[in-house]
Image (cartoon, rainbow, N blue to C red):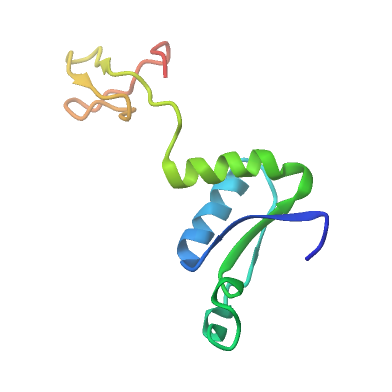
Length: 111
């Protein structure tokens, strides 16, 4: 493959590969999909050579790899629990809106 592009992710599930590419691109990194239709060649070709892949520019490898980890494992930092200023309900940090009254998390609340 080209020396200016680096493979940052490979998997047999094309939906997962597409998700990882979308996460990388939402971070502003250009990503290319390869081998999206080679699964039918498994048997004639080595199976690991038929897996769908995500490639990025070599200079974006470290940043893209960080986004791959987050796409697979979730965010590294979880927001702390908070109390709704509208109804006083205690909410876990994953919620941006109160499930009880619908009020948004205050902007000054640490995330």
